[in-house]
Length: 356
Image (tube, rainbow, N blue to C red; front, side, top):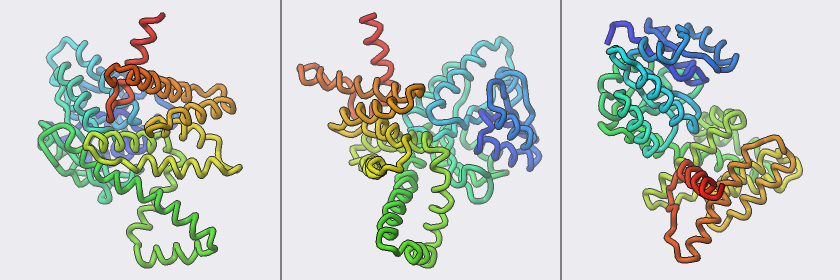
């Protein structure tokens, strides 16, 4: 690697922008490809001193390391685009190491590594812990897989980087383990806040939390304000954790707890209409709640007819119901616990193609 490390960032969102800023501050070069990105992303990249290139191909050829930091649902799509980009290259330029640092399950990281390997690109599994809007001593970066030892020194300039294994999936699994705690704590706090407020003791309760558990309350006060803006990402991450737990034959009660809180919110007149969409999403994963999932999605669509996201929830729920009917008819169950959303979607597409 060159003495000046060139880090391609896909893409400069909150965490990607913070990483690029930190990379630039230690004298290395953050690189971004911004075609189709929002005005906010353009502004963030320029403020962080990114070098902006006109194409994904140039980003690949100009970088020593490329790190993917996108919404979890886009992780595979970004890997496919990058693999297609480098696969079309006919020159002998050395390809960068690709670090997938998205909050997705180990099986998804393995799929991404296979996609990139087929294009001749080495993939390292990465995961960030700590604040998502800045990079510094409060953050820990987990790395695993072939090549993790080679890329770790570049990131140690700006963050505590730990190599936690030599297999892709180990870093993401360790983050999933941490998420079991970090995703449950906000729900517990909300329940505590509701109970203490109803008993007219919210102020004293929070004062005691700050006095006795300053670390916990500090984490929660930093984390909770991000939930309204990033609820879609939090929902996806929690679903990934739930599927991973089922693969490990765990009870995976976190999702059911989250659903309980949302349902209580939905019964209140002042509850945001978006709660109905969240319930349509969550209830797809709860046994014997598919009909409720469908009902909540329909109610949301009645209020937001131009929003297409609930259509996906409906398709997923109906797909599950279809499989349940097949099982009743003696046909082997198609989707087992832990089946990914993409598997469901692919199945629906196949069945629709057969009848169209």
